[in-house]
Image 1 (spheres, one colour):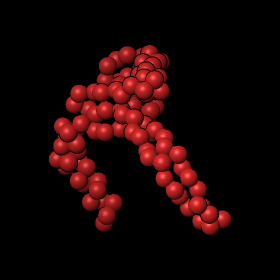
Image 2 (cartoon, helix red, strand yellow):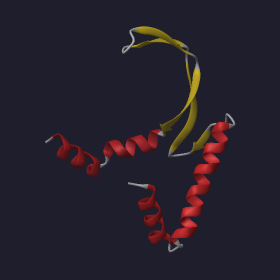
Image 3 (spheres, rainbow, N blue to C red):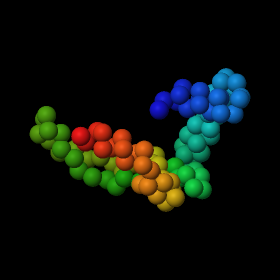
Image 4 (cartoon, one colour):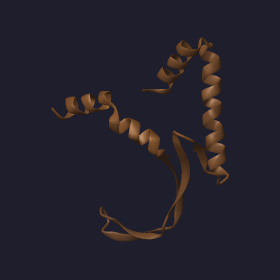
Length: 104
């Protein structure tokens, strides 16, 4: 599902104009992004958390030049789903049916 599809669905379910929904969604992403840039994690009870993870310094290989290179410690954004959200996905018959189609 794309952002445009999410906006359209919210608009039809709530009756709010698509332009207003788009502005709200964009504002939501901006708040999350700004908070994480400032070093704050963002928590949504029952949905999940946007957290900052630390990656340790490591030595990697550049296979094209066959040389070692150092990757300094750095931080990356990550999403950790809430336990209740994960449980709903695990129990979803729709997800199981779609997964069965993909593997068949």
